[in-house]
Length: 421
Image (cartoon, rainbow, N blue to C red; front, side, top):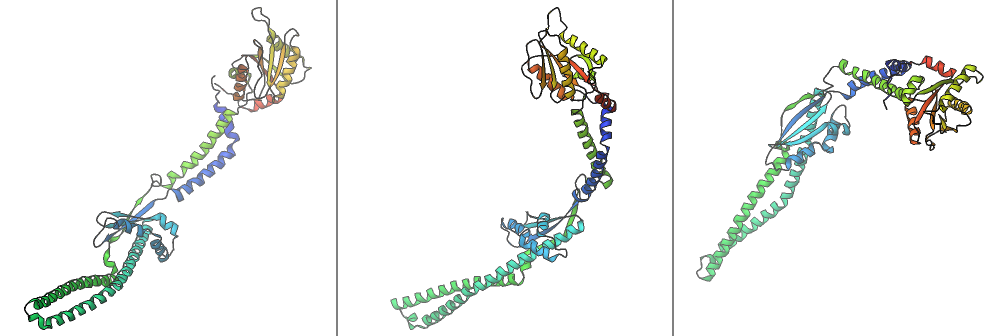
C-alpha cells in the first residue's frame, strides 16, 4: 500500500501551531552554541620540557622516571607551589610524561593558554627534578652512612695485618735455613698478599664513599633540563573557527530537529477528514457519505437508505451471503451510524455489527464487510490497521461508509485539506 504523504500546507499549519516551541528551541540552540564555544570547543595548548638523565642509563630507568614525574607525590608539590593551587585531579588530567630515546624524559602539560601551559610545564619540571634529587640525596647520604661501618672494620683489619707483617718480618727465623726459615718466609708472603687485597678493597670503598658524599652534596648533577618550556596550540577542527561560525550551528540544528519531530508526529497522527483520502488509504470505494445528526432529517434518511441498498445489491444475480458492519469501538458517531444501517438492511439478508477493539473475530466467508468510519476519528495508520485486520479475519473490505458530523465539519474547515499520496 502506498504511504500517505503530508502536504506543505499541513506542515506549515503544524509548525505554525508550534511556533512558541520552535522559538524556545531557537533560544536553547543559541545558549547551547555559546556554551559549546566557551567550554567545549576550546583551543588546547601543550607545552613540553625535556629532562636529560645523566650517568649510565638502564632501559627501565626512563619509564620509572616518567612515572615519578606524573606521580601524586610530585603533582601534590606542584599544586602547593602554584599561586592558584590547582587540584590534584586537574593536574593528573593535564600532565603526562614519556620516556624518549637517549635517556630523555619529556614532560607535557595541556592548558587553555600557551602561557599557562608553559607555566605549568616549568613548575612540574622543577618539582620533578627537585623531588627526584631529594630522593637521590637521601639515598646517597644513607649509602655513605652504610659504607662507614665496613670502612671502619676494614681499617682495623689493615692495621692488624700491618702489625702481624712487622712481627713476622722481625722474626729471626726469616734468616734461618731449612724448613723453619721456609715456613717463616711463606707466612710473611701470605700476610703481604692479604694486605694488598685489603688495600684494594679500601681504595674501592673510599671511591664509593666519595661518590655517595658527592651525590648527597650535589644531587642535581644527575638531571639536566634542556631549554625553557616550549609549546603550541592543538585546536579541534571546530574550535579553530570564530564564534560567529560555531554558534549558529546549534541555533539552526535544534529548531530543525524539533520541526522534524513535529512533522513526523503530525504525519503519524494525521486525522482523516476527507472521504477521497479515506478511500485511497482503505483501497476500497466509499459506498456513501452519511451524517451523524438528526435521525428525523429526510435527506439523511435518504442517504442511509441508499447505502443500505448498495450493501445488499446483487452482483451477477447472486444473492449477498451476509453484510458485516465494522466500526472502531472508540468511534461513537460511527457506532451510531452502523446501528442505523443495521436496522435498514432487509430482513432477508443476514447482517452483523462488530465494534472493533484490537483484533476482529473471524468473518463469515463471502460476507460484505463495510468499514463505517467517522470523519476525524482515526489516522491513516489506524485505518490501514483496521483494513489489515479485516483481511486477516477473512474478508476483503467491500467499501467504506463515511460518516460526517457537524463537529467534524468545523474541524475539517480549520485544518489544511491538501493531503496527497
